[in-house]
Image 1 (cartoon, rainbow, N blue to C red):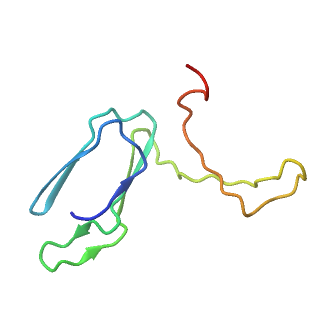
Image 2: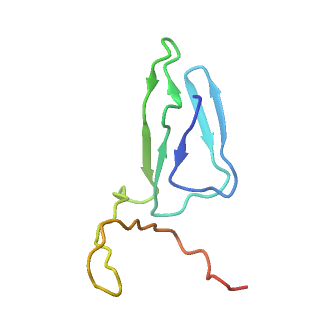
Length: 103
């Protein structure tokens, strides 16, 4: 493996990665959440050891629950003062970790 990769989670502690010949072991130090789907996108980080061919955008997905979540949301963004749809808006979702301004 080389280059960049990304995951669907932001671990508290960085992952450790060990590469030997044809095998790669990745270990995360924090605990996996129950009933959660995880997605690891390796981008261009996996290369054939013999010919050097790159496996592009390989994604490894697994779940700690009974099913794999689609990881998709759909809906319509409405402008509050007009009530009309706005297709130019971008919506970001994140897990709430606390309240703004709280101590």
